[in-house]
Length: 136
Image (cartoon, rainbow, N blue to C red; front, side):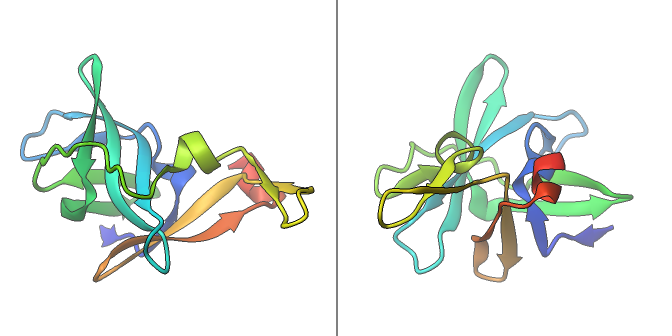
């Protein structure tokens, strides 16, 4: 089992989230980034728990890859209010949307998003617009 250094958003969407018990606490539905950073930082995860959606602090999460499968673990379940300053939901606002240039022309469609995990947190680092991202 190894810690994921980089991963594509599509690979973890809908995955079960585990805490301190063997039973999952919910499923990942979206990631919230704060765009006020130089690189957009993942600050929260939108999780479906039971029949409702909750936003959990992403600073206590661990994403590991075992046998090609990603496992999401929330070491400390801290529910937070929806971040109001500079929030951006990756699935809702970015994934499968058109990128528009400064002149207002549609350029390409966002097929997937690449996220890197470093010591200071998880950051959005790339937009995949190729055929491989579409197939993923």
